[in-house]
Image (cartoon, rainbow, N blue to C red):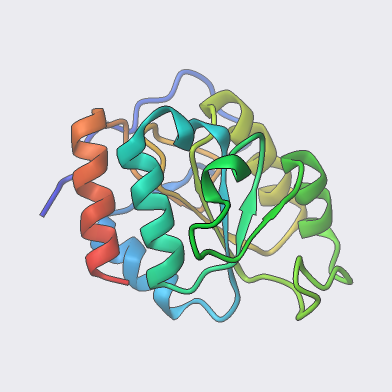
Length: 171
């Protein structure tokens, strides 16, 4: 088992509540038990072929709808995943709206999973969601994301790939 919860050092915090460090097997089980999850991927998945491969595998294995932000959509086209492009800030606004019916029109999401974003960027987005919605958020990023409900710790790229593999095994 990969230990990804050791290093949760942060340099500043947003509010009084920080995310709980989570192991990959627990995150995988939580994703698979979510009633209405949404996988939000950022353009950083395109910088590493292994990360892109794991992103596609997560979406396929858990049958997750994917919100492709930035230019991440280019890596998801013709990959057999249910991906739709949306701006991450617009998505955050919609996720806070209890009347929004989701990207597919089937209702509000209960859990979001984030991967492939810049830390400073996704932390701000999750800060708003933490304050203005009841969503659970699971950050499976390489960095500890303190505004998520749960997050991996600060880990190396090699450990991150191992952690994603373990998460996939538990979906």
